[in-house]
Image 1 (cartoon, rainbow, N blue to C red):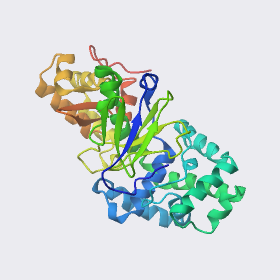
Image 2 (image 1 turned 180 degrees about the vertical axis):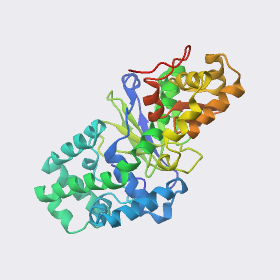
Image 3 (image 1 turned 90 degrees about the horizontal axis):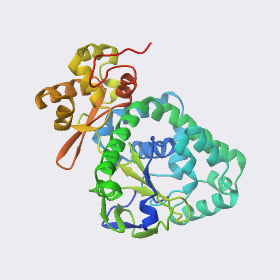
Image 4 (image 1 turned 120 degrees about the vertical axis):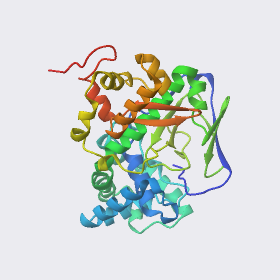
Amino acid sequence: MWGNGTRGNKVLRIHFTDRDLARVHVARTPDPLWETLLGLNQLTAPRRTVPVFADWRQRARATLVEEGLLGPARLLSDLAPASADYWPDFLTPAESADGLEAGLAALRATPRQRMTAELARTARSRRLPQWARALATGERQRVEEVVAAFRSVHRAIIGPDWTSVATTTEADRALRTRALRDGGVHGLLHSLRPVMDWRPPVLYVRYPKDRDLHLAGRGLRLVPSHFCWHTPISLADPALPPVLVHPIEHPVSREPVAARAHPSQALPRLLGRTRARVLAGLGAAATTGELARRLGISAASASEHVSALREAGLACSRRTGAHVVHVLTPLGVALLRGAPSPTGSIVSAS
């Protein structure tokens, strides 16, 4: 894959055909392998310290030391360092869209010829450690070490914050779904500004190098990423299924979900007919004005209740253009499944 190590006014030009426009889709869930590598990037690149990740970085570093995982973390960082322009594509197989174990199984099954070619390409741009030579030959022990490193690092520093990862990426997905609903695929692609600029039939993407990618009817998988920052990333091999991992907007608050009030302490604030209806009304993303009209309440009341839901970790808000759009977090969605109806009273699941 092409990493995000280089800055500058370079552009990836993604060329669409009519068939491609019909096959654009947004990933359903965060991708665990991409998030693991990009999380390590945030952890190991001091020059790119991002305030929104400050608390996570502190916790993650302490965890890696306490659990004796500096070696596995370094192994993955050697293969996909934050400063590099190129990472081997086999590290992020398409199968990881179905979860960590599915992705690791696909990585383990990488053909030896492909692994050798991609690591040879890596070695042309930077020096690899001695152990990577054995990996390049497809030596099973080395492959299993990479798989084990992914699993242990993800478990230690990515998994515990998966609620935050899922919340931010789901909020972005809701915005893209809304843009698709209101403006079709063109609206969806236009909504990716400012890191991308849709000028049909080409999507211009801020990128570490000048490059053209012709989709040729295969479509494009968009992957919102919690840990991706500033520059989108794609696979380097144009023959692989096209994917574009892109950064998302993070909440203004830098406080992680795990540090907020526990839901059991915040939920009493939600009791009451109107607030329950607001929770249900956010089953579909909405602005404050849209929510107020949907429920027949004042904009001020809608804003107050959304704020309370946000403080409880049940909703989050994102700015898109001139509007602020509110969506439920995964916790809010889980509560909604057995809670209120937008037009009626609270109904409990038995």
